[in-house]
Amino acid sequence: MNIFFQQVLNGLTLGSVYSLVALGLTLVYGILHIPNFAHGAFFMVGAYISFYVAGDLGANFWVAMIVSAAAVAVMAMISERLIFHPLRNSPALHDMIAAIGLLLFLEAVVQAIWGADFHRLPAPYTTILRFADLTAPAQRVLIIGAAIVLMIGLQIFLRRTTTGSTIVATAQNREGAALVGISPLKVSLLTFAISGALAAVAATLFAPINLIYPAMGHLVILKAFVIIILGGMGSIPGAIVGGMVIGFAESFGAFYISNNYKDIIAFVLLVFILSLRPQGLFPSEVR
Amino acid sequence: MLQLDRVMLNYGSFRALDGISLNVRDGELVVMLGANGAGKSSMFLAISGLRKLSGGSIKLAGGEITGASPATIVSRGLVHCPEGRKLFAHMSVAKNLMLGGYVHRGDKAGLKERLEQIYDMFPILREKRDNNAGSLSGGQQQMVAIGRALMGRPKLLLLDEPSLGLAPLVVRQVLDTIKAINASGTTVLLAEQNAYAALQIADRGYVIESGRVVLEGSRQELLNNDTVRRAYIGG
Ligand SMILES: Nc1ncnc2c1ncn2[C@@H]1O[C@H](COP(=O)(O)OP(=O)(O)OP(=O)(O)O)[C@@H](O)[C@H]1O
Ligand SMILES: [Mg+2]
Image 1 (cartoon, protein in one colour):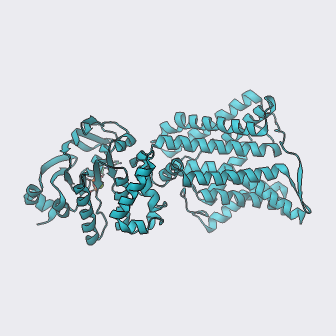
Image 2 (cartoon, each protein chain N blue to C red):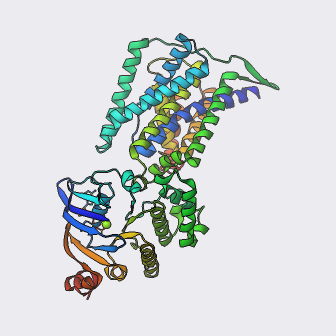
Image 3 (cartoon, protein in one colour):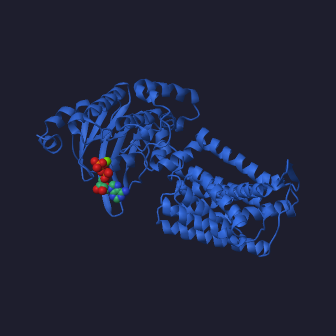
């Protein structure tokens, strides 16, 4: 029983992190149609900033997370303004190349500052929680709880606030949104900011149970792409469900099949699901 | 109210608007006639700031709006109800309407009141306010589009082919509604292919061809004009 529960917990933990990363990716795709390969680098930079603020500056974990989220949000807005916005009317391929360029640039900067070594962010809570005969490390429960809070918060923001509605409106009909007076530039900046902040928070939550290194975003971003293709490009519920599907598949696959193959499972699942449902699990619009 | 002075618009090397000059006076209902591809929609998009002019100027109520952003233009009281409606298909009717009042978002009470007026004008929308706009019939979607535009409190309303794809009976209703909106004090500029029906409710009209004004006149003049009869009315 406890072993099975550990896999569920693992699946939820991984799924939470993947969902948060995929949410940012899908929002940017749904609104701007940019496949942001640099999103994995936002994730990685987020982890380094938290590592710096919590480690070198000795700040509290939560303070580090907030600083990191804010810093990466600003960085994402700057990349939109300086890189993606000027390419708005050029072919989609240019966005892709620019995103890869940004990814390489950010990795080079991080490597120049912190080197290529592995780092570790100490876990803020190291206790093991017990419920009857089940055990759960506090950090994992924290990841799951924080992810749920963020997802609900994002939903409320998008559905219930006027500012959030401008994002959804722009995703559903760009010209319609401009005609009612919504500024497309403000919406895209806001979308990039949210996307960057989500990546940084995901990275900060994940860092204590993982390593920090310049290429840490690669596998995560590949999986996030798998998730949003599965979930439907631009679909918010798709990103959440897709993240959980991949998280669970990895956790159970690692345990019941082989730990060596866990990173392949996501891609096998992609091929399998797309051959049955080429449109993905959810239709592709921000809803 | 609105003045266009030698407005030019290019799509790459293609000239969609080739020096359009016209004016719409306070309180008028003016119709733009023209065949497919004449440039009616391009002209509306240029007026509402969604396309950048290649030349010429546009004035709204005496003030320059050439090159202004769509948001600025909407808040100055010029609202464009576009061809194809451009609704937020997966949002409720109520939300579509509320977003129509986006530039007045500071005035929540005013928006609520305005929303009630729109529901009084289109009772079916009150009934369907929680349905997704995309799930409505064509005629109802057109009402949402007009309602959304009215939420922006236009002094001048641009309507681009509001009757497109609607059944003849519904076309009648939509045109009657437009007449009523005009009668209540909103200036209207209307593009229509349905020339005969549109001229019935219009004060004046312009005919455009290949991005140029080729004819202008009062309702009677246009209804009696041979070219108009042959090209747009049939007979
Ligand atoms: N984005 C665009 N890029 C290139 N050409 C365009 C674009 N939009 C319109 N055109 C061309 O400009 C011309 C005018 O088009 P416009 O849509 O303004 O005509 P219209 O009078 O509204 O026609 P309709 O009655 O079919 O709506 C057409 O020849 C059209 O093909
Ligand atoms: Mg048109």
